[in-house]
Length: 325
Image 1 (cartoon, one colour):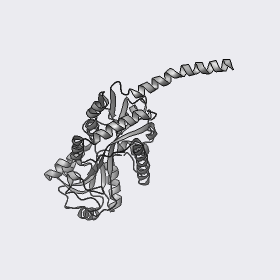
Image 2 (cartoon, rainbow, N blue to C red):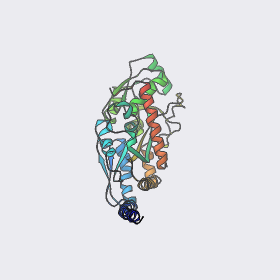
Image 3 (cartoon, helix red, strand yellow):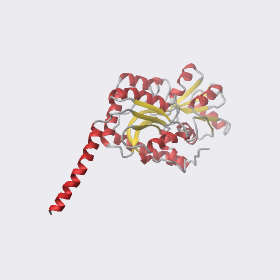
Image 4 (cartoon, rainbow, N blue to C red):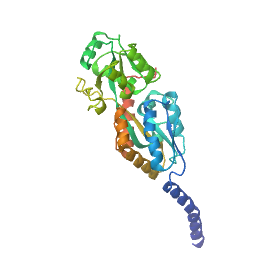
């Protein structure tokens, strides 16, 4: 009895400092700079949202939050880096919805999986807008659909890359409207938008920031916002339901994730900081200018939403035989 008691006491003494150390580390988090990986080049939507939060997160947390752009592989290079990172809250991922939700169904040998991540907070949701080239003889969604039906297989739609939300959105638009537009993938929103303005492609389904200047200048025509409500920054653009295509909704999103296994107190602290920042007037104004919507979600809500998106987009991809080609 004495030997067992002594052994138990000895093991407890050995375990004690480790438990105290982990508790201290969580309580004092962060005590060094944090890296926020963006799995895309600078200048895109994911990068814009990351930088919307990073400086203010630095102020809220008392440690620098460094944005690290690791583009490549349709988002998989940067995503895999965070999937393999130590789950201590010092390497985070600002993720784009198509990378997180579509890549697992699009890419057979993916070097990460959605379960490698824990949801921290929603950065921003971006309803997509349906825009057409100025040369197209249509001024609203109904007349464009009629024009497309009269010219099956002759019209093209641009996307910012195979597997992107604009690519998937075009597939769903074809299906919902009963039309036959041909997909033309580009390497990013810049060249896709340039060809839309030049009339090289007829249509694009994209987040408003990429085309807002061209909409306001009249270089392209906005037909509808694929959302259930109008956006205050683009109040003149009707929703798809108002424009005659009820049920067609398309959102992109940008959310903060941590590696799976990150202690809940750290996730909760990051979530509280993100939600506090999202309530700041300057942030709300900037998000509005970008054509995005902010969501006040707890980590559990973020996780549940992300899981549902993986399931929903996986089904869309499989049902429509969508590939990266």
